[in-house]
Image (cartoon, rainbow, N blue to C red; front, side, top):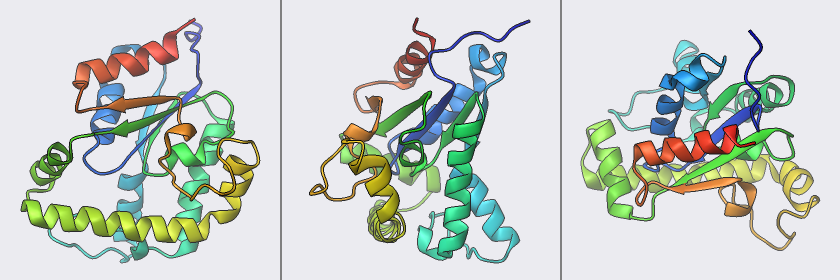
Length: 210
């Protein structure tokens, strides 16, 4: 039986902690339309943590997630460029990570989804419940990870930013590097104003439209 024709051949999901990106990945992986259509979901964060634990590079910090500074640049690039290769060469991938949308810039046929949550208290509450930590610890960890990751990735991917984002005219050279700028994405979903089923429907409608 031939596979269904989709408007996009791959999907990326990006979002900062508490935005709902992991939840969307789980919903898409369980969706029968995609499951029987041959789609495969993949979390870049889960892969990186598993690899780092295997290599003895990851130290547990309670239940809180760590920043990218735990890894060497070469390791980060290997994982990130591996995602870009999957999107460029394969099809029916759903890749979720902080940088998956950036890694999909100028890759044809990829639906780039940005998850946001405009209510900070809701974001914090989600992280508290997910990681079973205090609110103040969740906030400190979220802020630390964001600052450290942005600084590291800005240093690492300055050239790619120019090639993939500035040269095509997505943003100007004067704009600061921001891997979660709305201009970089095809679909932006605020999970404060959209529940899980509404969020799922937005993505399904986007990839099945004629």
